[in-house]
Amino acid sequence: MFDQDHTQSGLGSALSRLRVSMPDAARGRADRIASINARYIGTKRDDVLNGLVDLLVGNAAGAAHGEPGKRRALFVVGESGSGKSTAIRHLIDTRPEFQPYRDDAGQTVRPMVSFDAPSPLTLKLLAKVGIEAVG
Image (cartoon, rainbow, N blue to C red; front, side, top):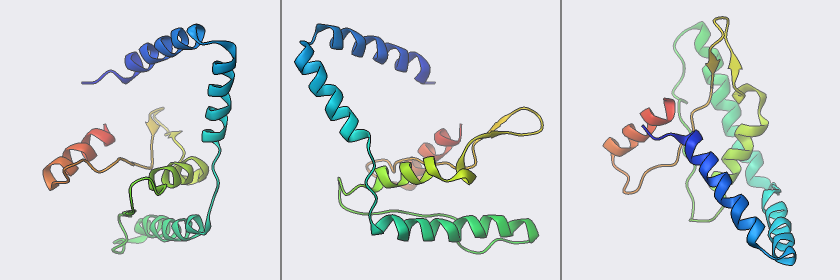
C-alpha cells in the first residue's frame, strides 16, 4: 500500500531544499502566493452546499430511529477549476460533525469520507477508490 507519511516527509524535505536554494525575493513571493491561495472566499454557492449537507446529515442522524431516507450521497459536479473540491474541503474542515474523534475503544473515527472521482469514471474504479478512501 502507498505510504503517505513517508511520501509527505520526502516532499517536505524536497520543498525545504528548494526553498533554501531560492533567492530571498523569490521565496518571499512564493510565501505571499501561498498565503493568498490558502484563503477561502465563500460564495452563495456555499450556502446552497451547506443546506444540502444539512439535509444529508439530518438524514443520517434520523437513521438512529429507523430506516434512513434516500439522501445518502451528495455529488458535486461542475466545470474543471470551478472550486468544487475547494468548497467541499472547506465545508468538511469547518463543520464540527465531520471532525475526527476517538470512540469509547480509543479508535479514531472519521465520520466523513470524501474522494475525487477517478478518470475514466467507471463503477469498478469508483468502488476501488471509495474502498481505498475508507481505509
